[in-house]
Amino acid sequence: MIIYNVTVNIEDSVHDEWLIWIKQHIPKVLATGKFDGATFSKVLVEEDMGGQTYSIQYRSYSRVALDKYYKEDADVLRQEGLKKFADKMLAFRTELEVIDTYAVNFK
Image 1 (cartoon, rainbow, N blue to C red):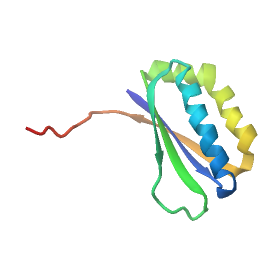
Image 2 (image 1 turned 90 degrees about the horizontal axis):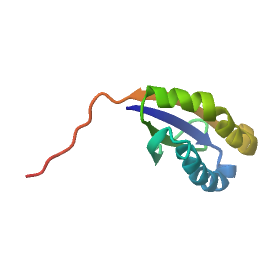
Image 3 (image 1 turned 90 degrees about the vertical axis):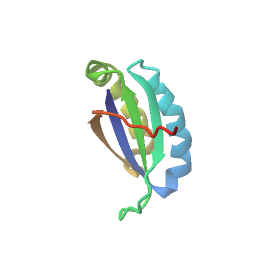
């Protein structure tokens, strides 16, 4: 599995509006059919640049599915946020390959 991670720093002046928007945006990304779910998290560190930082981790079905997302959907979906929040939002993207998962088993 590949995790497509989007980290976003959003200025305080548009934070509340962005929070409403992103909660509507995530289902649009999932509706592309290239991901099986997403986790939306707040990053718990103070940023020197100000604002608040969040991470959205989309779980892609495969490398092929993620590449199809880039080719077929990413540009249109990215433009929505850029048009709405322009220079008040800074985003960067990373890919993570899941090697193994572990869980605590209580007996």
